[in-house]
Length: 153
Image (cartoon, rainbow, N blue to C red; front, side):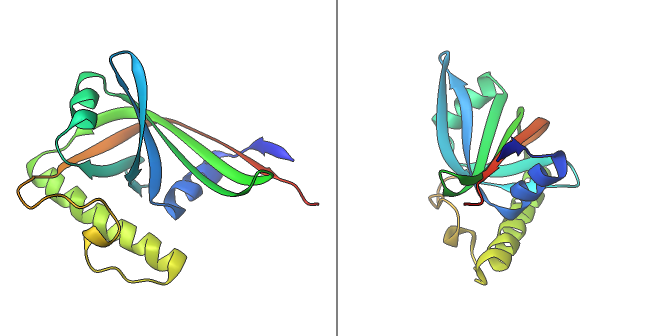
């Protein structure tokens, strides 16, 4: 059986995971990269961070982005959510606060899912070089859709 996920099921999948694939446009072509993220249910947004580079430069030019999250047990047993939204770069106190929220949120997901207790952000997300300042960004969600398939045979 294959069907659409309702909004509550979609947000549950977002809250239960912390790795997704971010799609953005560069030069008229889509690019997709894995990211570590945190879903903030209070603001209905996704928070992440990155070093300065291609992804950040291109999202500044074209703020339309998409995030895909899935849980795949098999070809006939999976869930998938697609988030459409806009990139927003955070700065100063907002960036510092949201990076903390991101870190604490991801630690909670890891604890709930795996029983592990990471202490540092580098244990579950891309390491930023000491001389780099992380660019913290938010995806302001405009639409969430999802599907799932489960065969009982």
